[in-house]
Image (cartoon, rainbow over all chains, first blue to last red; front, top):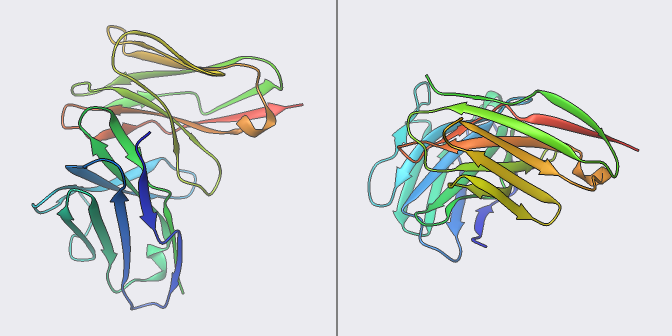
Length: 114
Length: 109
């Protein structure tokens, strides 16, 4: 099946620094990638949708200047959490969509801001 | 609005069969997914239904009725490792995933 690789799986950073998370579709071209955030004991929350070569569409309440998304190629999207704070600590998950067979998820990144 | 309903929690016995239901009301429909999620991990893909009927994959089967806005995930020969949350998600007309809150499945020996 289709494979989506997300890196890193875990990261600890100091408050005020920035963290970049990568999402790659390994064996298919993903024209659309989705970024989600998991809050404890809640379902995944969609943060933004990115289409290759265009600006990401952010969901209401998500700060676009804080969560920078770049989708420069059909196989790579990045999420950068800028000036991270402890409340940004969470589980971030990407999903890449293959038009024919559906959407597949990365392994997730557990971010801890100290 | 868009809505997906599934039971919050279910309990079943090892070796038995359990059916987890999901009903949905969404703007458009481009398929329904079932995911399994163990605590602290990302969801893993189980099944994708876009046409009516039953899809069988080993111990897991998924059923879809688009006219009824209804799906179920059937787990047979339950094992302790099947204890997890099971998430139902619908791909809407904009190809965005609309998620249910998940069903926590507890397996007892």
